[in-house]
Length: 267
Image (tube, rainbow, N blue to C red; front, side, top):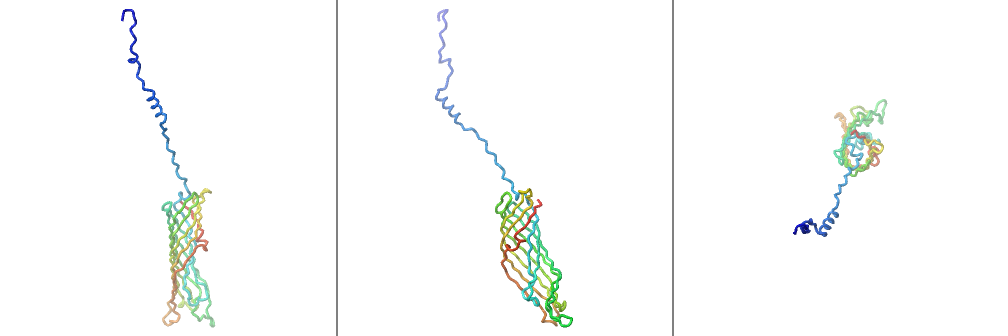
């Protein structure tokens, strides 16, 4: 260039920065704007604790059961009611899990001496060999159950409970004619049944350890009852050797002690 003249301007294409076409910028901006924000997962709430989930071992009353201990038609007692031995049972209920539990109960029964002198009197002595009062009665009862919690609510459970029980009882009927005519009676019984009902725990009163149960059920009982004595061989006519056995259907709806139960959980 001649002296004194300014140099020609540089080419604009060499100095200007390179820019992306507008359609590319619009496409990138649209993709950024359309990207969905990352959402945090909602916190999972723990299930509400029920009264049932807070207890494991409890003490309970398994009802008052009766065992007939003399056979039908025992000599001298044809007109009397069959002698029964009543045995209350207490025990524990232990929940192996929130669904399955175990019931174990033990009961005892005792009969004290009673008089029933219905003998034939000649002079000052009884001459008949009729059976009189009862003495020395004793019995034991074992109870086992497997409660299943079908449905559990906050304060209430629906339970299905298969049960099995065993009872044994014995006593002696003394005869007015003398001890040689006393009759020893004994009985055994095996019970199998199932109950369904509900358990209400008083957690709404602040006492979840206290529970009230209401049950109904049905079952079978096999029972065998015997009566015998051991008089001298010179009195063969007074020997008693009698047995009654059979299977019967049992319902618990008419037995209040078996329908209503109280359980107190100690932990």
